Amino acid sequence: MATQLELQAKLEGVLGSRNVYYQPPESVKMAYPAIVYSRPNIGSRFANDAAYSHLFRYELIVIDRKPDHPVIMELLKFRYCSYDRQYISDNLYHDVLTLYF
Image 1 (tube, rainbow, N blue to C red):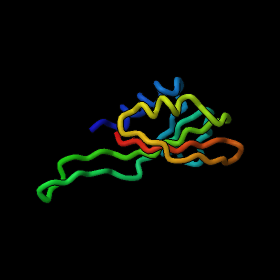
Image 2: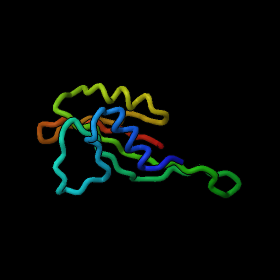
Image 3: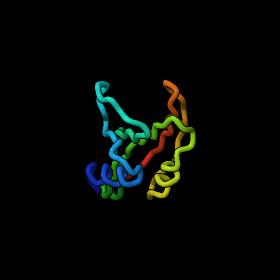
């Protein structure tokens, strides 16, 4: 099981900047393009009435002024990453992905 700091470093490497934010408070002024991520769940696998494996599930949101940021395709190369949806808010494109890490 990898740590949140390892994920932070990988996301910064893929984005090519430090505009990666983990569960940022409303007061944080973000620069774009950016990746915002949070951990809404932990996936567990069970056998013989016991948990034997745990993976953190992260929700990644790529935020940019362009509709098709190339970082999305790079993120989809991560093992256990899937694309969920896109929406527009405040004239910014938000692409939501799910990553088990």
